[in-house]
Image (cartoon, rainbow, N blue to C red; front, side, top):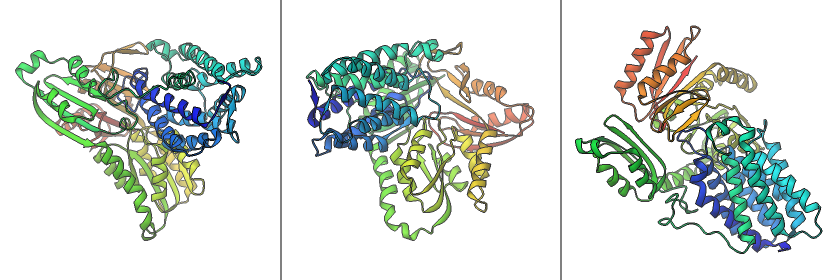
Length: 543
């Protein structure tokens, strides 16, 4: 195939998106940290789905016009750092084909190089051994190869691109020691290779199709249209005598994997907590009820939640005239009704639902920016994997004064909000809020989703991990033991305040016992809040 026209380009995009959708759970499993978060494969798949859906709806047959629509769709749909970088790669590819109705092999190779260059520029401190390395090495190698062959075909270019991307991916553990320790390749790079393999398959004559929901061996939600939604199903069961004899986490987890994804299954004595995203919540509940009685259960329609967010952020734009224009507005991100209320009590004007289990997209931030009516807007992402999407939204809204304070944890966001003063200048607020962020230490307690090793620490699936900033410092079967050991690492003689935010899996009595422990062992003031957050049993700030 010498040239790529608009029809062929759309086939490539559909094939790449479907391939990623079919394999995103495998890519999720490559994540180094064994925590239940948004995950690279999920974020990349949602990002690519958003862009490709728009590109396939484009009526133009020109490659450049389709690439332009794709670039914008990816930009707005980008979730997580991997999604943002992916959007930037394709932004560069669009720049490389701008003005072209069709492209030849050399032009395709040049477009990949442009994608690499734009992606690198978008990252403040590029890290080698990541998706950036894979796109750069593969693009540069392919461009050099294409330059040496007269009239090289697009198929030849794509074959070389996939070949070198795979080779580069296998070298990522040599560049990032943490990958080598855990025994995985970079997840973002793996996602990019998966997309390119889909492109190549289309050029070879086979458009990869979405796996059927029932037949899928990796996830019941690999369908492009439904993977983002379905029902968020959570329940806690108390094992019966018979249930205790027959219950095994692996068995229930395997059963749930046939009907859903984003699965968490954790046992603590006779209590089992389950979280799953599924299209058939009743079936998930039936699986759990075989082992005992429900202590708590919750089923939420994620499609309706999504539509509600859209309604809240787009429809209210109409009566914006009725909202008095403010000097300042704060936009922040949190999951859990208690945490959301904490931020609102600290003058946050708009709280985007999200965090570890669902990273907001660039569009979510843009809609929030459009919703608030303020002269100066401050965004607090509260998660290291959300910062880039927030920054991208600020760039998109270039006609408004938007500043992102790169808060990477909930305690950092809370401290920044506390320091905010509506009566002082914008620059003074930014300076003082950034300083507050730098002074808070963050600890979190959650469960491990797989067996692994992190910096020499053996971690077993189902263990409770104490995470101090970016380091896992303890992994034990008991939640309270993990929390106490984490506190011991966090609190020093100079510290004065400990803020404890407990999650939806923690009883109030447990939280109060933890406060008593802190007061008995440390000379600090303690604040306790019910954040009702998922995923993290405790979020702890120390100042």
